[in-house]
Length: 382
Image (cartoon, rainbow, N blue to C red):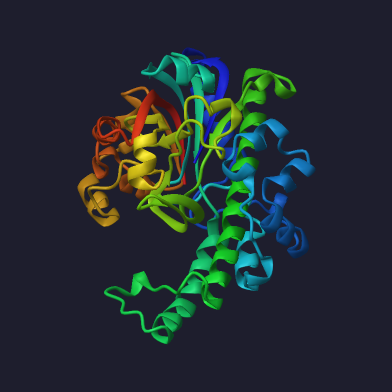
């Protein structure tokens, strides 16, 4: 998940919403199997991307040092070994940089509706009515293939190490085993690909803003607030029964939420805590929060990464019936471009929990602290 801030207001976005939605959807392919042949990489280059992450994008002029400084792990998870990624995964990923995945993946242009913590918001450059961009997408077909390739390996490993599985989807291997190390090396490659994917989407989003608003170069004002992983396993040191212990923290359906003062929080935010991005759905809003000391102690520095579904995709399609989700959102001032009608039905607001309630639980429990609410204006769905 990635958050950008602009130098524009919400009203300036409303004034050009149709044109902006059109340009964004043309520049950034979205949906199942989407690709961009104009940016396809050869295998040698792709392996460099998997190993270097955003460092490659910076080298090629697609990212600045300022961008890299505001990405988790500076945009490169260590330990990536492209040799652990199959040819099939490479083939699937080589033309998907700069694309949005399907389902709940999106690019959303919105604005800051409300500020709850002035000090933290100021550190992030956020203020009321400021236009923002949220980007939610990951490692696309490459990551999906890495997962598929790893399932059989992990099933065999579980049997080999005598691990009882209550569910096949919990297949696993000891972290220090050959299988465990291979998976971590491949997963780091997927994470680095995802960082670059969001960076390339940022590059073309900046171009779209320049085109629509008649800007030149950096005048787009789209600056990276933060980019943070979710659905990932990270090796981290935490206190366990009063002792500093090296752990593999699995954040599935979760994202990192480190507190103020933590050395892995960018210097700009170290006095307030790591930005935590919790999206809702395309018809409601999203939130920016910061991690807290109490949350770090209780959750290994983790928070939910979204509102969470209350309907399956099939249930949502059935509930949508003959309704026009696009028209319903238009009446609320939200313009949506979707890869398909089915996707929009699956992603309608009623399919999700109300993110206001979810975030209030995080805030009241002290896991994170609310900073700002972002409301959508233009949404491109995968």
